[in-house]
Image 1 (cartoon, chains in turn yellow, purple):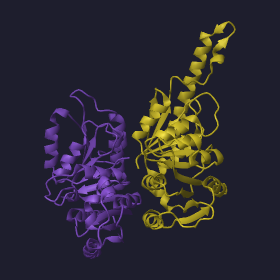
Image 2 (cartoon, helix red, strand yellow):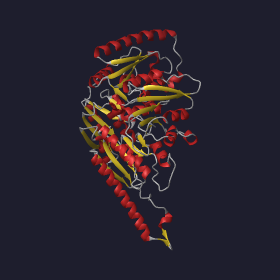
Image 3 (cartoon, one colour):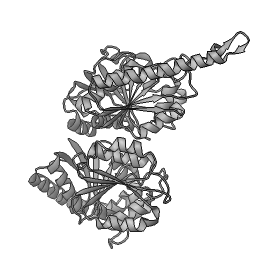
Image 4 (tube, chains in turn cyan, orange):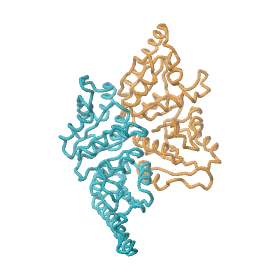
Length: 279
Length: 274
């Protein structure tokens, strides 16, 4: 794996994204690109802030704009300094068009993206999972590491497997893109319906595949509803645990009516998530 | 370690495909999984439509198929053992073989197929529909190998600015890093003489580290025919393509282009699509 992109908002700079991206780049000896989404339609201030007694104040606008410019520059500088300190190969992109489109485009030419779960690219507060993240994950062209609020070094990996193609695809992508993590303790979690067997789906094929890539993986088959069982299981994990899952197949109408596992994990847990899907 | 699958129908043994797998194993150990299918289903294997129409065969055909399969299985076992290739065997697939194969490909890193299976009995006419159906349904990249070929000494990455093309270039670097060190040419065929290569900076940033001996080359579409023949003359090259996906965005990489290459029986082709 050679190119990681860190999606960064200069106006709400995520140190967690910075730290996860740098750690992964260092670990994989990859090139790290800090993609600063300098979307001109997005400012830190709202309309009412531009108003003073008597109407819109030109001075105030200029002041607020300069503030934004400064903050963006400071963020880029911080990123650069941290990359230099970590002695990694890096570069910066300043994407000055609509953020979501630019980021999706950048993902075509990247092996991995790192982004903070709370990114909104707006000046409004939003609950996790944010609209920006949900839209990104539906269309992104490379796997994404969704970072929690604070960086913790990854020491353990949990692979979620439900027998669906996207979950196998995610495990494959994870093993190709971050092969160094194969050395970490790894477990596979599956959930079967209540009162059914504890057999792993596609048991033989899955085990034959896993033996090549994660020979020491431990398999846990739980029973019940996936959303409940997985959350209950993962709530006991320390924040150094990375969860790998497939999610967000495009065009799935059911997403509108039923939250995806990725949405639930982002909302309920403080763990980093590696999410990959194919068309 | 990669898990590579190969399909064997009846008593057919693809020398080209096996030789390719053997060479890969020499570079990096692999697990080679042989999937053994009955010959009688050979046409329906690669055609969805036929698979639904063709009734179950009578028991006589199955018995003779069984012998053929056993023979092939024994051949495969011997050859793998002699070549020091770790292997496994999957058999007992009779109905809905293509769907079973799709599931097998989900749990595999790569599939290697000998291109001759896609030809009619004369070996002259490429059954394009079969090729397209087969490759479209597979859940892992596929390497199509002609019977007589040279193991690649260089790589050609076909790039048309589409997401499919980039996907294939990325997948090749993940799955066959041992081949990315070879002389590599990234060829972009634009729409017109003056058209700029899309996102050249981004593609360079993506590929310069995984492909250390890379040259980027833009090709005028006027000389497409010459390109195809030039390509076919590079007898020790391997083509990487995202074609055969159903997105249909590519202008240069219409199925006729890659079909021409496969039809010429000369170069191995790596095909990956999302």
